[in-house]
Length: 163
Image (tube, rainbow, N blue to C red):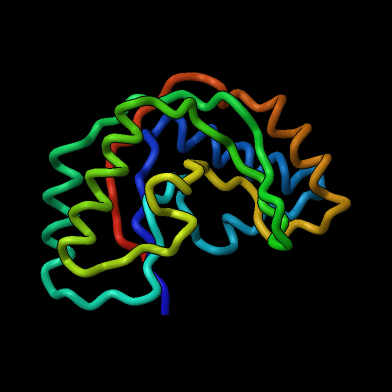
């Protein structure tokens, strides 16, 4: 069973991303994010397993120390994988990279190795807007994202552990 650590977007941008999910659905593009019960976020990491009992306290302490993190979405992207993922990409700031590196250092100290995609040097920060898209829906999803009112400043304001 896997676990993700997610950085949550402020309320105004969360509403904009949820609106984008709805626009995708209205235009026949399957996002799956609402169906998964997802909340708009940027994942810091994914773990295969979670075992140290003090990880929850450590996560809450970390969240208190780093939030808020100012960002801005600047691009729409896709991953070259079979999962059919379309995402919004933020401007990668020194602060975002510092927070990411500090987080991974703390988790490593607890003996929690992240999946390789999420480790410093490999991580592509992103907010997923659609997953498991058929290849023929990806161009429409990208076009809808490009027209969405999401390319503006926002803050990452919280953090949670998701099973």
